[in-house]
View 1 (tube, protein in one colour):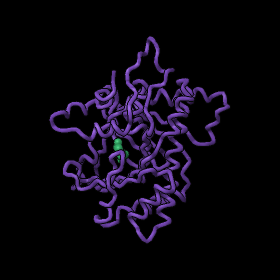
View 2 (cartoon, protein in one colour):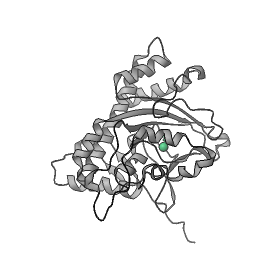
View 3 (tube, rainbow, N blue to C red):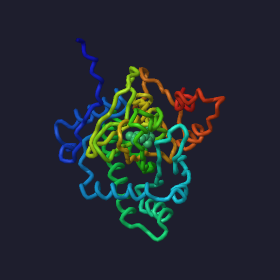
View 4 (cartoon, rainbow, N blue to C red):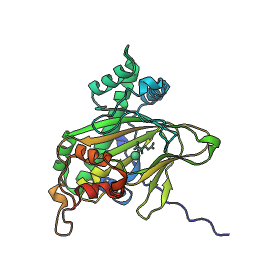
Length: 317
Ligand SMILES: O=C(O)CCC(=O)C(=O)O
Ligand SMILES: [Fe+2]
């Protein structure tokens, strides 16, 4: 009896801090491996040890606390500059709920959100959300420095990094009625620069579409992180790194919580000169990230087709 072809797996790359010696002879190879994974899949699984057990435990408590808040409080998490805020009870995604913290890697960002939800204070929530968002943001910087090294655009990335701000999202997906496979979050590409995803328990849920149109289920542990390109990375990399379509499919009888950072660029986004040549002509005009978000959010039924490849519609050449 023939067996089904084995589904593809996302590349898994060890980025544990002890193995990240940029003076080692294998460093360039490691940078190339990260870059190739992003070029091929738009994402990969990073094994990373930047989160201590204590911080992990604290974020489990923090996410329980935030999702246990009454709905009247949650809705105070209004839309921020990048269009994020409370989401829940959506007819198209009834299992899904999200709260998000703007400027999440700064004490002010974490404090503003905490005060809004708990006017009399919740220091442990504030501390753990801030610390966790910082670790995820650090992982993004490690990865993008490796990509920049591999592509020879280190200075360009440092400049971009200086104008980066992070959003930290708490995503919750209820188990579906009857445990039947049901959509948790519909297929999309992220509108940020990069996204880092952690899930609180081992298991599946996240699915990624490969370049040949095949959906692959991603199974990963809380000690691993999905590093994923968003639309803005597609443009910045002059199309070398494509933001992958992804979705969450829920099955079985357990809820799922994911903690996610997304980065946003405050200054103009411009393709580095080093990525433009005769063989790689410029594919994207310089643009403003927040105007791109506005453009994306102003979709109506009449112009819905542009969402298919919004970044190329917006600033493609
Ligand atoms: O929960 C996940 O694994 C994915 C979440 C996601 O796609 C998002 O927040 O944009
Ligand atoms: Fe996403």
